[in-house]
Image (cartoon, rainbow, N blue to C red; front, side, top):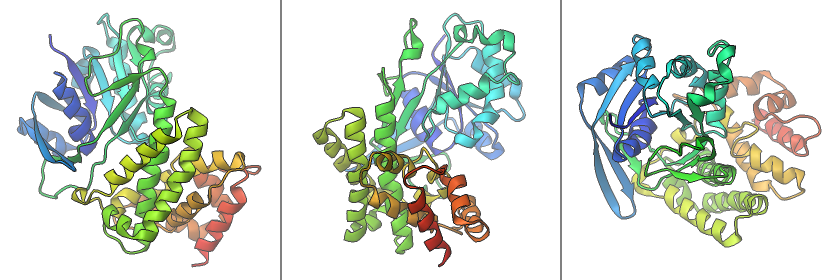
Length: 388
């Protein structure tokens, strides 16, 4: 029997990154989703293309050897597929993890294969697989008398993923356009003694935290800062925003602040981090990606969260008495990202700015509390935004 991976989420990251790399490593991929139209497309079409865009041009991979199941109408089929799979991955968004957990839990409980199932969440968040594991192990989903032995049936490994998926052609169908650069780093320690799954694209490491924070506080910080400043100044894409010298310099200043944190916290050398920053700025400046600022800036409530790309590093720096001025500026622009068409969170943020006092809003959105050194400065920013 060949290798099989079940992947939750048939979106652009699922089809264009995770499934592509699993397919290239010899896995059959079973997509699981609740979107009727998407599942029907995957069932009717036996292949789709992934076009990788880089400075060296384009490369097209044709993806085959996949199936698709609608877990809303065919839950038992989904459970059966997972119960004898080698891997389960997901790219559904942090808020959806709790909804896919019951199906995964039932499949794990029914598993009889001797090698534990590898469960890897590919979400843009810190500790994504831990969060999923928490939902799977909830007594509502896994019987308490089965929890002590769950490690015999499944192993949960956190991951860090990095690949830019720009806005897609509305007529692309299943085909995905994506940048050629990628990084997929996964904690290998949960897989002792069996060893991790054989996926060529994955870099297996003993300590994932430096990779997660370096990516989040460099790629995501720089990308989002360019988006929010670009939106404020009427720029259409990240590339055009970064052609503006003032925005370009501000983004670099944000990354200088986060780099200071990364170097001191994780022992990454100054030269290594500088090289990484240059690579990231080159990537997000790629005009061929046509990366629209509203797409990158969407979901401002999540992106202003306590462990996220601005507040996370700024809080660390503030507590250490270090500079975080540029990050505060980027946060101000994020608070100004309101009432953007197609982005529910931006409308919710707009309503909160009108209905809540500044400190209550900062405590709820940013997770800051009395005693945090940066609280007063963020509250002042929100008051400034509210006066506009």
